[in-house]
Image 1 (spheres, helix red, strand yellow):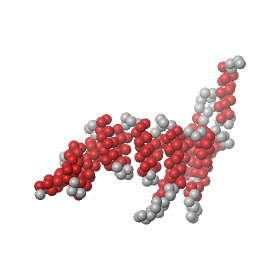
Image 2 (cartoon, helix red, strand yellow):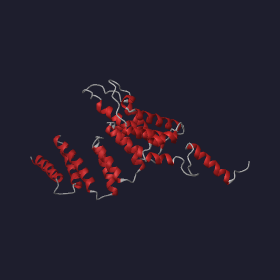
Image 3 (cartoon, rainbow, N blue to C red):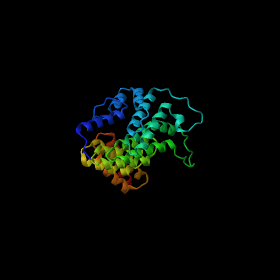
Length: 298
């Protein structure tokens, strides 16, 4: 078989580019979808949709979804349907069109990270609204079943995390959404995955420590993350103060429970990390030390 001449190859590239853009005069070798992305940047959504037409490739479908999502930003909010709980009843028609386009893009390319993230970002506000509107279960009552829309967002972010091991946008999005939705286990797992991808990021270690000390409900585990961050920045006063606060809280609890040896050990740790001797934190340390001395002097 003869090799194609350079001229024939050039004509073939031009034909492929023109076919993907529906007759556009894109230059051979250039990104055939660059013009559509430029139109999106200019908020010319109807032109994007007209150019995409009935294309079925994943990239075109994704850009069509972005165009519909853009149109949704200025579209009126639909009148809520009484008693309706389905996702569609809480969405604008333009959002529904965007979701359908994104879903088709993922169906055409299951590892399409941008489309998976787009689905999650489109549905996340509706899912969080559903969480906020759900009645709180009474004490002792069984937990209600998880909202299917919340589950869908978590799956979309999770799929994006698995599809690209070098990307961190999906993990960041998952952390934010899961934390706000009260799905602490999923947020914790996303933090751990993010740290595996950014091992030399002390700021991320501090963030994870803040999460564990707060919403995660694991202050002792937070100490390990803060200590790891101090290896990179041993003079980080703010992180030391956070560690001191955790030790002070533990010392106070031990004092209330009359566990004086454990309280003394925690106060020693708190003193190690108390940076400013004139701070309220230092005053609290002195108060707890005085209480311990008083008890032991009796």
